[in-house]
Image (cartoon, rainbow, N blue to C red; front, side, top):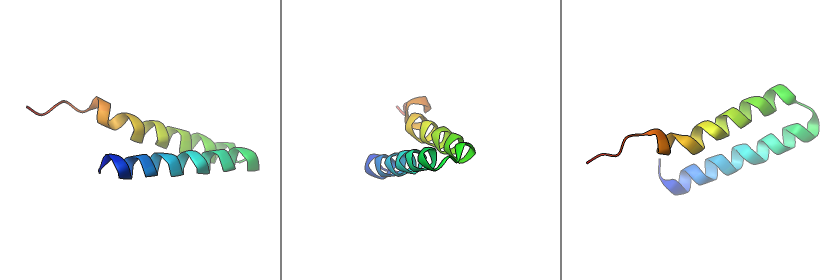
Length: 50
């Protein structure tokens, strides 16, 4: 996944999370926040290839 695609995915999940907070769906919000954290930190946790 390229950086551009990852940024779009994280942004879309974040916006969906904001809308679910507004609607009161807190379980869905929690899952979306976890997904955002996962996709935004996966690149930092991978070892650097030499």
